[in-house]
Image (cartoon, rainbow, N blue to C red; front, side, top):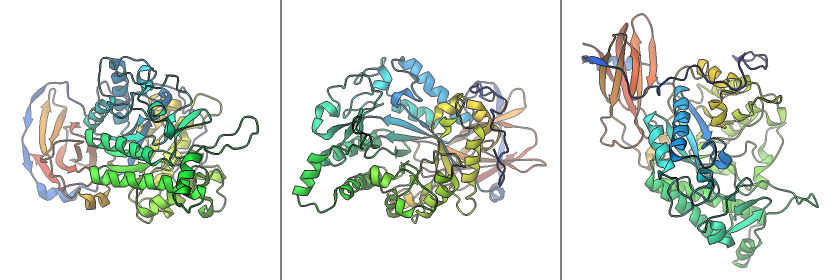
Length: 533
């Protein structure tokens, strides 16, 4: 590796650890989780709210990981696990995410016109039981479970949908009778070794929007998320080796016969644009505090690319006009998949980071996706320092851009602590917690009231070496993710920032505690301060 602007200097090796190892810092119980010790009583606190202004601003950084369910990439680890085993795996992933000080999980809940939750619109995913349409046994609702468990740990849960894929190449189950390939075969096209919902079918778009609205209405998710699959990535004819066109002739001819004037490629882009716009409108009208995130391929349209940037054009092949979506403000965060090493000049991380920031007149969040799963036990593995250095580059935007962050693809690489990466993150970039950056423009859509400061209870542990701080919402809205910011000042030292609803804190030298609550869109409410009575 190389040294530059505060980068970690490394040798390209494995930090002296095995390719996959269990992180030594994982606690025996979830950090900030329910205490199992005994208490000798509560500590009297004295309000000292005039001290609240002395605490600094809370650190902000979006730290997330994708949990892919398609092909059992991240969860569940294989098809056919019992409900108990699935839940145990989910809890283990969430515990590690919390201990690593991530603050969001992006869970794939619709892989191929299927559902990893109880749905009346689409069949149960085969990646749960092995058979599409088969509910978990004994029954539970995986999405409800993930939302509840994530929120208990102070983690956001972003629901990840694939809007157009109908069957993935590694699928093995026969399609259920309720699957679109059987119930609405006119919408579904075979392209290569996959099935695809034709984006040019208006009724298919209505169905996808109904699926998303159903989840918004029934689950307390924090965001709706889609990835880079719009029209499919091109495939070649096995004989001619020529690129196959997507087989949308029926929907195209209906458009032309109805008087449509666009060229075919522009019509395809319009189909995608309209779905993205309508998704944004649907989210705002159904649940205004829920964000909308998109994670597209990392290269922009060729006409706008910086000098030296080259490669696949999602604008021309996937019909994704990402720059327009940013310009129109149809999304709340963009997570461009910058899945190349820093030194790869044709897809240079730093140049692409700046490119996407420059395409952002509405000042939406830009949080790059990192290809963390390129760290493996194979000879062509990336060194773990590559991801650490990409995080350092994403942080260079401060203080001019306070909204920084990134997402890891995917959680399995962190779970396996590949080449000691999770250890290095825990000891380095993630040594201290951070809150998700606020999304203030959503206040205009209805999220206007700030959360009041929480109630504080300080319990004296036995033996007296630490306190357990418990925070309880003072808000009239008790549902959803309750997030709190905590600053602690100790004699002879500065402020220490923590986040959570139940914290184990050192007792020796504690002088001042400052607390506040965050609302659904990440804004901090008024602070309260206390000293020991």
